[in-house]
Amino acid sequence: MNLQDIVREQTRPILDLMKGTENQVEEHLRNQGAAEARERKLKHEAGEIQSAISEQERTLRDLQLKAHEIQRQIAELQARLRERQRENERAEADHSRSREEQAQRLRDAAHARKEAEDWGRKVAEGRDRISQYRRRLQQERRASLQKYLDGLWTELIGLQQEVAGGNEARAAFEMLNRARHDNPHVAELWETRQEWLRIAQSAGPLPVRETARCEVQRIEGDLEKQFPGALKAASTRTPDELLELYFFAWTADGGYSLPLCIPNLVKESLDAGKSDPPETLAARLVWSFARAFEPPQTKAWRPRFEVQAEHLVMILDSVFEGGKDPPTITFPVGTSGRVTFMLSELPAEIRGAMNNENTDL
Image 1 (tube, helix red, strand yellow):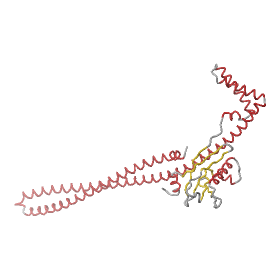
Image 2 (spheres, helix red, strand yellow):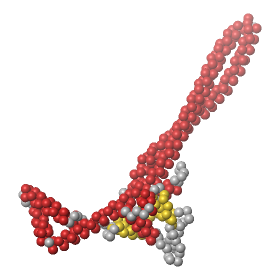
Image 3 (cartoon, one colour):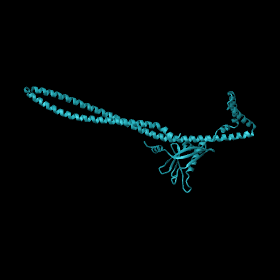
Image 4 (cartoon, helix red, strand yellow):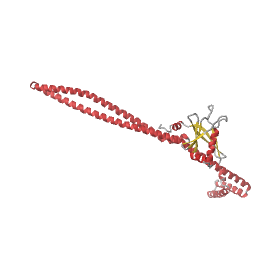
């Protein structure tokens, strides 16, 4: 699995969560805006009603004055008094209704204010979740590089073991070939095996083919005891060359930072003087990279090595001259294996995650 696939696999759940939350935030903002618009409208309507209430209060005072005047002239103005009283009753009813309508508008405005505050809290919560998802996304992108390096180291270890096992098997196969010419018993076993193989692979009766397979297994067991791994070498091939992308990053001073796939535990074992296969593989890998970047003899040069995120990193302050492309690094594994590394700059999203490692972006 290449780095791009790993990045997509590691980040897809976070990107989906971010997209869903961003949609929620947009919906919350629309609801918040609608609630605030209702609040402004209701307050405006309440203000307009206040003008009507003031006018009605002035009318009410005038009518009350006239009622008092009519009472002083009750004899002549009895009919007009009753009319004014009815008008007064209507005005009071209108005033009461206006008061109630104003109170209702203010209650609705308070409810709209609370609703807008609720939507605002949801918007803030959504934005906080998005910030957390962004931090997790950056962490996963950084982890993708470490996972890629761990996978590459495992692949190199596997290739080393495969090459070592293949060398032993090929040596056993060469011994078997010599014995077929020098030892009559071995030659007879080999010829008998070939004959039984022909019968087992033929279109003959099933019992005959089963007997032939049993004989082949018996003879191969005898040969395996005398020449362990020889028959396996006869049916396998030398491991193919491994071609891998190797990613680097620019440093602040224009050099290169090459995160090697060597785990820190192997580096510590190598420093302690151990020379087991993993330590030997690590030493050859460091040597291959250092030699690939070796400058002209007229120029002093020395790489620096640091441990970052549990992996060894080679840092070169100044690498290429004249705008040359990064070199291709050929790394031998055993006597027959080979790995070719094609240097490539880290993908943009990984560079961003590494640059923002100590921030919330």
